[in-house]
Image 1 (cartoon, rainbow, N blue to C red):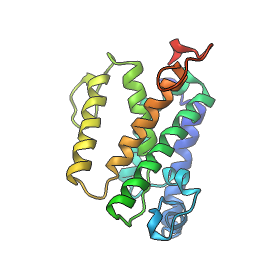
Image 2 (image 1 turned 90 degrees about the vertical axis):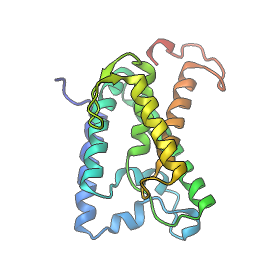
Image 3 (image 1 turned 45 degrees about the vertical axis):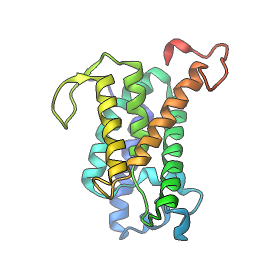
Length: 205
């Protein structure tokens, strides 16, 4: 097994460290760094990024870091550190924007934490770049093509978001992360709605 590439390794270490520090401080980090709805009075601009470094439970942290290791490692090796961070940043920001919009429309008042928006962006990219790759998800433990896995999980997120299933989970933020990832790939490839760019490295993305 190859070693973790540097950005993925750093992200896992930072997320783990901040989780336990937040526990130690009685969730003081969550109060300041979680993504609070615009109408809550607790929103601060930096939260559109910092929320992605916090997690609500050990299980939440574990599964997000597992996904980061599974999908992020290979993508970082292909893209390089800079593009990998650009991609994650775009996914995290679009996930935050989606969550803020839905929270304002529905009137939700709870904060959002977790790297899932960025992770769902990576998941979409993995499925687009390696559609025929067979992967074994934990839930359900059934081997499936990456393109099928992405479609199933995206469909489930949409269904659960619309129906309110599994309340307390930011399903629309996950979909927003996928949208950001899709847009970033199309930007790199020079595909609509973006203009074609010379030397875009189309074959790498």
